[in-house]
Amino acid sequence: MTGSLQGGSALISQIHEIAALISDIDSMLTERQWPEAEVRMSAPTSEERTFYTFNYATWLWLR
Image (cartoon, rainbow, N blue to C red):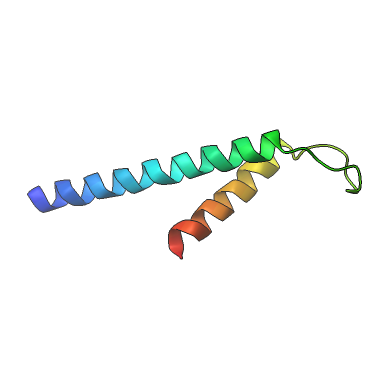
């Protein structure tokens, strides 16, 4: 039983790390100054930030 508790604790720790990564990346995307040369003149939507942030955090976690 102790082993499963330690495994659960490690999993929760990893989840917290991923959540912190997602939060950091989301804030970077939100605060980014978008240059006028880009085709789209607005910052990404909340759904886009969530999608790309989740993909990037997953990639970081898996590599």
